[in-house]
Image (cartoon, rainbow, N blue to C red):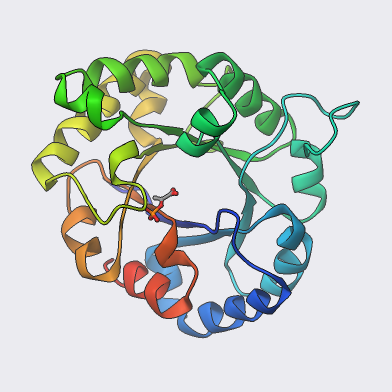
Length: 249
Ligand code: PEP
């Protein structure tokens, strides 16, 4: 497939102002050859978004948010709108991360509304889905991710404004990963569902794998058919690890 892979880093609730310097180290390694092969993105906590976006200007590294509210503005203390992410220099936002789904009770309908807010603000929506360990052990993985995908996809999605991230909940931050065969099964299934839901456009939507990706396993995971990049948590905090993953391409 001819699409350009995306390696996106999710810093989660990590990073004080000193972490801004990490973007300089990332930029130093993101040379023209690598930039020609992949897209690179960092999603810092909201407090660092504007400063990181400013510092990343001219490096080719994109900056995104980790969550947004479904509304454009209003009485929602503590939340941020997709428009605010765009205004701060972000070009994308993660929605439906499993930590948002579990910590904040976000349903597919909520995730869909947030993704639609992202598209309205001109951002790319990175929609996360993934099964729990219990769901996998019960043989329900495809049923679960298929339901999450259908329920979370924003209206108006196309390959230019939508990225799907498959992140098995049991693989996030645990050091555990599915086998390449298991990843292939899920990504192949998701590709079919995307084509069913979006038509031909669905064949060009990037499907990222996320969950304990690190430099030592990136090449194996990224070589799986229909894996079009990675969503990286812990290993995106340090430039050396993040670039080590990017170098898998
Ligand atoms: C994530 O939070 O999106 C993630 C994949 O985390 P980690 O890489 O740390 O497992």
